[in-house]
Length: 125
Image 1 (cartoon, rainbow, N blue to C red):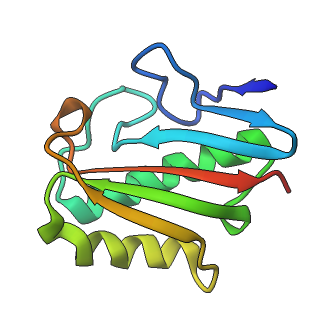
Image 2 (cartoon, rainbow, N blue to C red):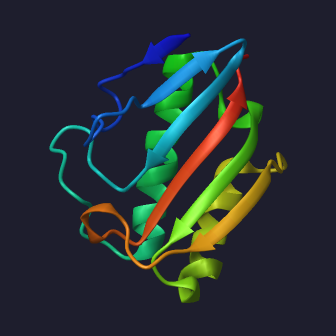
């Protein structure tokens, strides 16, 4: 196993890694809308937060030797299911024609009171 760390994405805010690579697979921890430079939550609407989440996720994948087009499964966590369409629009733009398996789950609360978190599993390219 290999632990992934990049300063191009937010530091882990707890006792976990940004991602782990094992047997050609990368398991990415959930990304929330934290600015990697300041570690501050993006003060924006759910679309802007999702944009930052997807960019952070892509940077972690790149550090692990993967890409968004090698993702096989994602999980989206939403603080409010009413945000589903807005999050889906940003998510869809980032994945293009690639359609990984996905679950979307409404949760009571997310770390730092953000609106969205996304985790994924990908194949190392």
